[in-house]
Image (cartoon, rainbow, N blue to C red; front, side, top):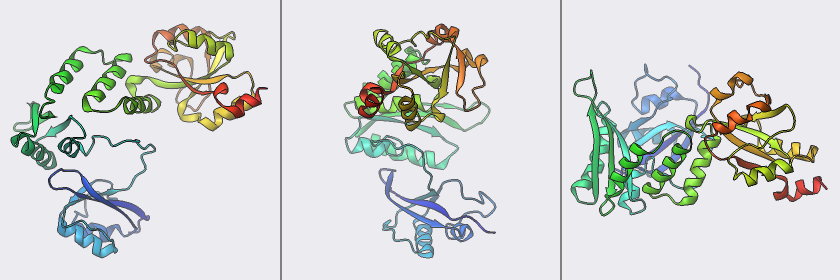
Length: 333
C-alpha cells in the first residue's frame, strides 16, 4: 500500500519529570516499515494518526531504520504525526510540562486529569505522587468511582509546591462561586491563570486567543466596520456596547473570513472607515437574521443591535484602526 510522505515527531520522555526531553522530526512514506520497527499492531490505526509510547529498544530500531540522529539516551519516546496547530503560544504552558515546571520552581501549582482505565494516566499520577511523598508537592484529589463501571475511577488531582497549598482551595472556591458564562468565564480564566502562575500579559494573550478562536463560552467572534463618530461613541461607552448605525442594516463578517490584509484594503478603498471591531455574542440571539454557516458578509438589521448589546459576552475589541496606521491615515487625507 502506498502512503503520502508524512512528518513525524519523536519526543524522548524524561523518566522522572514526565515531559519531553528532546524532540526530533523526520519524514517517511513507508508507514509499514515504521509500524514494524515501532512494533505497532498493523490492524489498528493504519494511517498512524494516534500517539504511541515507544520503549527505548523500539526507539533505537526506528532511528536505525530511518537514519535518524537522536541522542535519546535510552529513554522512552512518544511517536506522533507532526501537525501545525495554526497558532503558537509565545510562552511555555503547563500542558505536558506540569511536573517539571513545579519541581523546577517555575510554577506554583497545576492539575492533571486521571482515568484509571488508561495505564499512562496511572503512571503519570505515580510520578507526581512520588514528589508528594518527598514533601516537595502537596496534593488534593477529586477522583470518583465511575457509575456502571466497577473498578474505574476518574477525576482531577491538584498539586501545589510546598508553601503554596492555599492555591488549591482558592481554585475550588472560584469554580464554585463564579459565573461560568459570558464575562464570568473570562474572569474564571484570568483567576485560574493567576493561580497557576501565569503573568498578566500571558493571560491577556490566552484570553484573546480563545475569544478569536470562537470558543463556545465566548460566543461567536464577529467583525463590523465603524466610522469616526461611531468609534468616538464606542470609546465613551467603555467598549461595552456596539454603537448605533444610521442605516437600516449593517454588515457582519466572521473572523474566519476577514483577515488583517482584507481589513486594510477595505480601509484604503473607503476613507470613511475608521476601524474594524470584533464583538462576541451567542449566535442563538441573531442566527435568525442570516445564514452564518456561509462565509458572508452578512447583512443584519440594525434593530438587532440592542439584542446584541444585551448578550455581549466580553467587551468590544478594536482589531485595526486608521489613526494607528500611518499608511491608512495618509490614505484618508
